[in-house]
Image 1: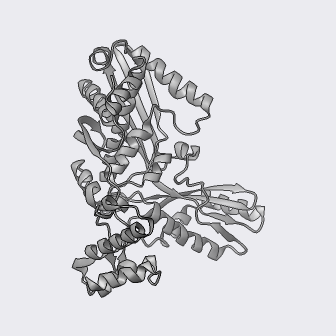
Image 2 (image 1 turned 45 degrees about the vertical axis):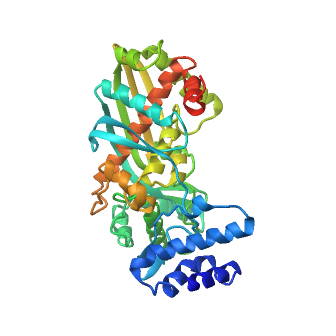
Image 3 (image 1 turned 180 degrees about the vertical axis):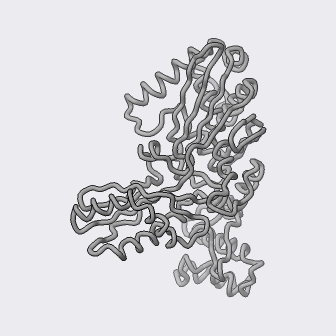
Length: 433
């Protein structure tokens, strides 16, 4: 198209700003036809990629031709999904399972979608699934549901700070009053945890957010609430809408103690004969118990681990997150998992607890493409109608915890078998004996 070439030339010369490229193509090439929105955004991505190719001399054909339609229209405003898109990154995806789950929300057999470039990961989850299934399945539960954001306010003096913190804790009508400021029907303020440092007041606001992970919704709600609070507090100031006490996308112990997102637990009893049939020679409940204690607790304590004691929870979590369109940065806080392996009469009592699993079935990357298909595969593709109607995301949380449990069970058993973990990675990743 001559018009597209003209736009590309102008873009290459810097006459068109990055953030205006999609809108210009949509309006000038496709006459604002909503049915051609995806084409306009794809054209913009190809133009950006072509300009980068021409300026660097590097071919980006795979990136440029990997099309992912994640744009949309909102009240006539074009939403590009991400900024300055040039294509898409492709990650191989495997399916482990099906695994038997007897949970509060996940009931039945489920495949586990895992997107990863790491050899041995899907196979490791699958062997863990085999042991779980031969043991009769895994039990799961959700014990906390809430997303937090923590604005930081500054009081004029320490007396005013203390007085307001007491009010936040004791005024039963305050939460109801502040909820009136929230415009999002899927966000509801549940309670506020106040923390005072001199004149600084941290307000850790905890909300229900339906099937959404809720970080953006809670941020907007917290901003509206903070405006309302400051309206009545003379001499107070807002320092930041997010003070790191939330805590978002960072390892922190407050998320473990108080929960963020979903707190999920899983347990399975693996009989001694199942350990012998599924895993290598020498693997017993006692040997697995020793590995988990010495590795996950003694070794982690010595290394200074601050949040979560597990075998390799982040591995399965990242693959599950990538497959289901989650915010990948939340692997940092969500992987704070605690593994327990107790040798009991007749076998191994294996447990995984994930106190701050930040996950969603709607919003962000869960809305489109392969992630949407993966969520439907898991029976988590529907959307609730209120903050409390969120069985989809709780089901997903239990399935995710199961994936983590399967891999950690397998890897703990592999390490209980001496050198097997190293040998299997060499065989599967490098093809070496």
